[in-house]
Amino acid sequence: MNQYETIFVMTPVLSDDQLKETVKDYKTFLQEKGAVIVNEDNWGLKKLAYPIKKKSTGFYYLFEFKADGSVIAELEIAYKRDERLLRFLTVKLDKHAVAFNEKFKNKKVETAK
Amino acid sequence: MSDSEVRYLTPPSIEVKKDKYCRFKKSKIKHVDYKNPDFLLKFLNEQGKILPRRITGTSLKFQRKISQSVKRARQLSLLPYVADNLK
Image (cartoon, rainbow over the protein chains, first blue to last red):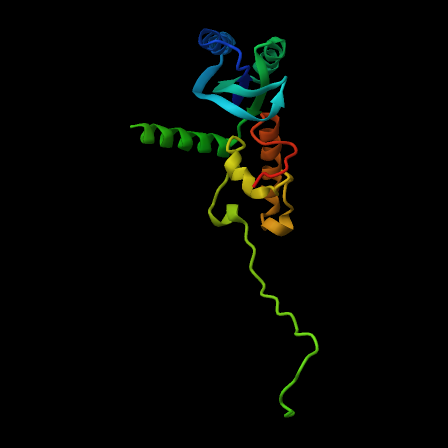
């Protein structure tokens, strides 16, 4: 099992319900494949640095999970087939990255309190 | 004019050598985060190009990581591929 991190950008034309549905789709997809979700983060609506498909904004969402490598290929195929997404990126995390994310998460929780 | 006084036609340029250092090694940062475009902006020029090591003073190990992170950020549209006035 490796630790991965995946970010996807959804189109701004989606309604709130559709956004939640998209996120839920991928969450259940990952869980069905036996992935353990460590962290998830909603970045909300952000301005893009350059237009993609004539859209200048997008909803960012992040998942951090532990899974086997074979899951990634299936996930990326699902991403490619999905017309609700503008961009996606999946990255394998090394030990420094895991430590960094852990620290970042704790910091965020502390400031939220 | 006295002998001790030496005069030059063009004043000799005195270069003050400023020591460059790797900011990652100095502050013991081990991971370069691609999700933070504001931080990566320090290693770009105003056109959005990655600055060379000889200007920023970053060590080779971290320059590679910066380059990787900037490219990832560009893909996610967190940083532009080309820009005019980034700073």
